[in-house]
Image (cartoon, rainbow, N blue to C red):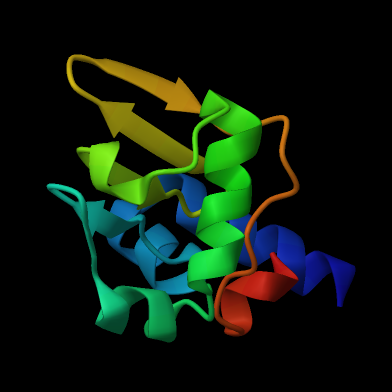
Length: 104
């Protein structure tokens, strides 16, 4: 099993398309201050999860002030307000949808 995992990781390292298939892609959760409900639902992220990360990263409450928010494939959320970006790395990563990428 460990050897199989290493083999898949090796292939994902050399093939971007295979890496996306196994590990997933980043997702935009907020665009121009509007929540993208479909993306939130697809990633099993609630509005409350997003607000919590926003409070931890920016010490702000209002989602409307956010230009964009992205959920990276690592589970880290990034918020973009105006011309600068801040990561919520120190926060507990948001839950991603369950897929085979969970095992890598």
